[in-house]
Length: 87
Image (cartoon, rainbow, N blue to C red; front, top):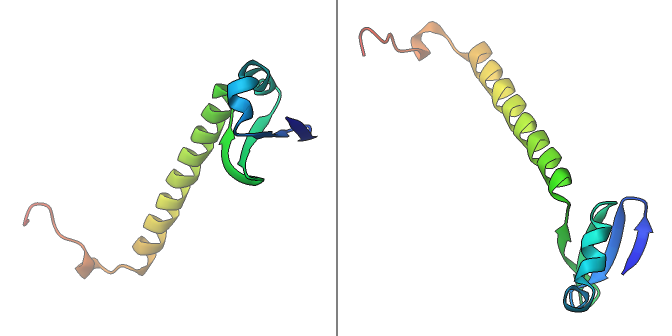
């Protein structure tokens, strides 16, 4: 396993079998990029890093949906809406 900067390390996929404990310990410090035949195939994150990433993705999705709704509302006219009482 090679640490390439303070936030990333690279490990061969085959190292998971022989150095799994070392790789798991490394996850507390940074993410680990797994390679097979010198090509990245996966990224391992600590659960805390994963949770932060998931929260960020959820917020980005909510923001994007909100902005889409605002744009549609700006372009819409009264005839584009259905009265719930008449529906």
